[in-house]
Length: 215
Image (cartoon, rainbow, N blue to C red; front, side, top):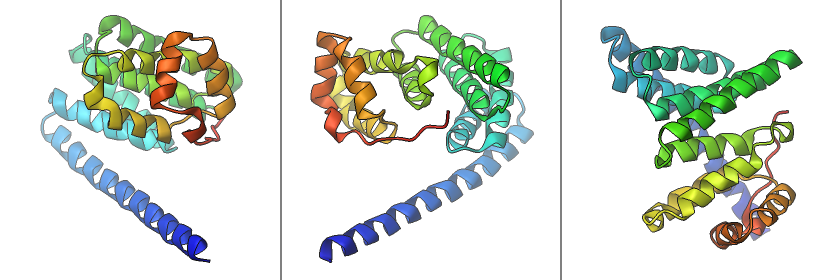
């Protein structure tokens, strides 16, 4: 009974936290929209607003996906060399694919998004955010996208960075939240060799939650 009571209290706190985070996100989006309206060419505001749209879109908000794509279209028209913006833009395109009901469009949008994500890595291979965005995105895509191994490779690249110890807690939180199913992770990691064994020391397969993804 004590365990059940604790679990119920924990779940209630977790739900409350998620609701508060969502409310904060909506308020922040409104603030940033007003700021961008006042300064249409403000690149930092575009980036921040686009990131919030991305996060809302990742939670299933289709309208935020479309708004995010438009914001990053504007930003990239000003600065096409912004690799982080390219990565977010690509991630949003995969979400557009997620939400499309027409199979040819679903595949086309997902392919375009993955190409953007790969291009962002080519543009700035040492950028932590670019690897995180692509890594997180790939773990949330359906199996037929074939992006799981790419995502794990992104996390391996981060693990091998000299400054990785400073990033450990953040990366663990990301992987735990967006964790892939145990079977798929174990199968893929087996094929990645010694670097994968390094990853498993930091992110044990048995601690990764199952996530039901939208196919």
